[in-house]
Amino acid sequence: MFICRAEAAARALAVIVVSVATTGCALTPDGTSEEMSRIARQGGRYEPGIEERSLPELPAQATWEDVLRRAFLANGELEAAYFDWKAAAERIEVASAWPNSRLMLGYSYTFSGGNMKGFDRNSFSFSPDSMESLLWPTKAAQQGKVALDEARAAGARFRAAKFDLQRRVLVAWAEFGLLAEKARIERERRSLAQLTFETARSRLLGGGMQQDLLRAEVEVRVADDTVRAIEAELASARALLNSMLARAPDAPLAAPTPMQPPREIAADDAALLQAAVDLNPELEVLAHQTAGRADALELAKMQWLPDINPTFAFTGSASQAIGAAIMLPTTIKEIEGGIKEAGANLRGSEAMLRQARRDREGLFVATLVSLRDAERQAALFSGNIVPAAERIAAISRQSYSAGMVGYLDMIEAERTLLASRLTAAEARAVREKRLAEIEALMGVDIETIADLGAGATSGVPFAASHKPGVHP
Image (tube, rainbow, N blue to C red; front, top):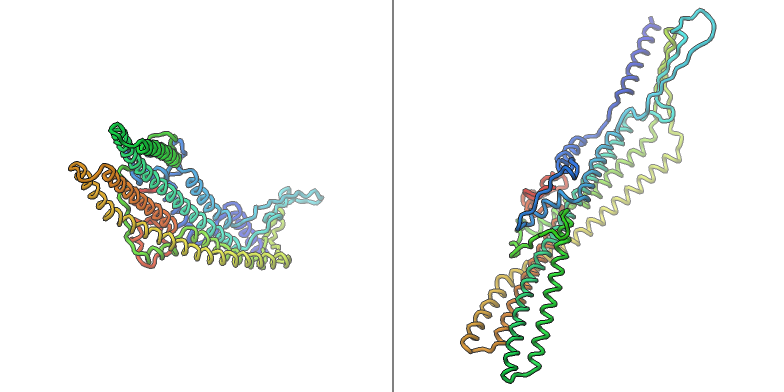
């Protein structure tokens, strides 16, 4: 009776070993399905090949939303970051797969004499690959945790790439608009210089001084050179933007005319700073790397657990056998060294994360101060100085028509107006550039910052970091 039960147990174990070895499973950690869902939500636009993907055409008068939307879909670096993220996520099942060892099948045939049946002369054996021990399941599960940490870090790198691209595009767009405004102002200055030259030439015919005419001619030439230089910068800026949008460098692209109104910031400085600390994508990368090294340290400690390789063999119907080979952790120095190395890596990541947090805080505060100063200057010039200069220029033109002021006084008032308009445009452009930098530091679009509320954490859904209607 005992022998029959032993044979039945051996057969049952053989079925289990063979079925597990041939089908396999993955001891994936909690959070894997959520990570795969995030990838699926972000990857719909990138899964089709670039030749099958339709990029949105820009309207004749494009806005920053139009430009940014196309840049997200056209940029190769952002697409590569997405596929790096996807590849890292696919490695979770690879790392946590169990059994991790291939099934080794053995066969032998007995040629000895005796009255034996043909089937009883055949011997079969099943065991894990002798070159790779079968891991204890907890080790495979821990390897999955390390892989999940790396996938999350890759997701954070994708988010960092998205905001870095957004920063570069919005900064280039603001610079493009500023150059267009500069070109308009410098053309007006050139027109004023030409008028001054014509006036000096008329006065020379009436007995005026030669040096006034020469001075006016120099001003015309300098003004014309300035216009040409800015137009060249404008063409360069257009080519740079077109390259970001996967368009021909000389493709037509109209600059914002006039400069678009500034984007609103629906949060105070304290909320912005909190978001920069909690949601910065570069800090998130370091945080996931630190978590991965903590899990790697735990995995290194698990090397003290022995691995067990089960075996099953039978010879025809004559005998059945089960057994196990225990792989003892005798490489003591190697295991201890691995634990110490993992611990040192963890301490290094913790120090890097701590320093990066301080650096990002300082950089964010400096950028925010620059933004607020640009806002102050833009408000001052747009709301006070430019209107005042416009009134002075209008009064000067009326006074000149009435013969109450000289021509040069009127020209000087026009020049003051142009200088005020230029300073106001520069302040607005600086403000938009700093705002794009702040978004990159926060890892959140300024349009969605108010929706996050107080106490936002790095667990905020990635979709919340996208501009409404603008998706990569």
